[in-house]
Image: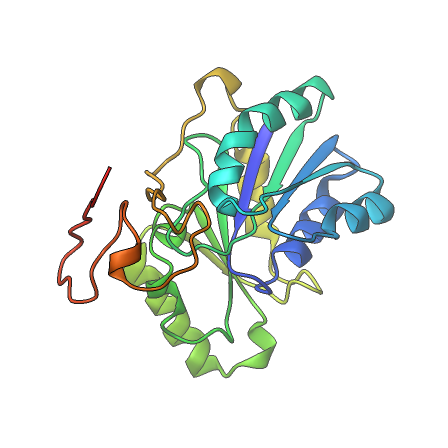
Amino acid sequence: MKLLVIAGPPSAGKTALTKQIVRRFKDEMKIAYLKIDVVKAFEDVELSREFDILTKKVYSGDLCPDHAGVMVLGDAVEWADRNKADLFIVESAGLCLRCSPYLNQGLGIIVLSSISGIHAPEKMGAMVALADIAVVTKIDLVSQAEREVFIQKIKEVHPHIGLMETNALQGTSLQRLYQFIEKSEDIDKNHLVLKGSPPIGTCTICIGKKEIGWDHHFGVIKKLDGQIADYLYRGE
């Protein structure tokens, strides 16, 4: 079974890209799809209706969606494998720009909207730096100069990333992506690990305290005037 993990911020075009991939491979492979989101998701319903593929969704609720993705991914891979999927596509919620949902196997795809601002790739850290492929969408909405600056910013974060630009709604210029997918190796589900370390999210805010200010909280937190990543733990 081949594995794709598709990440990126909200409204970047992840689902539009997913539809193009499914449309391209649905007659050659049995496809399974998992959507991870926070409160509501409709992508699984749309894909099931349009392409008649196997779909599932998970809501993270109060948990970080990327952390939730890590926790359920083992079961999800088993589910796809049990249903004899040839291609398993996981679409993340993409709300935390610090997390990176990519695995040591399969392909990690970051979807970036060209209208999100030229500094967007730098703000996303590991989500860009650990991806295998970057797909830049909505290229019809910006000038050629803006596109070139945006591409350069991605290369500064990840010099060796596979880059392509597309209008995801129309599926233009995606042949290289399809070739990457065709050539990707099947995964060994018993040896899947994250490419990067997710951030620690353990503090009193995580368990629901609403007060603001240092005096009311403890855990893995950082002071306003902290000049370096000196994560401080207060209290027991």
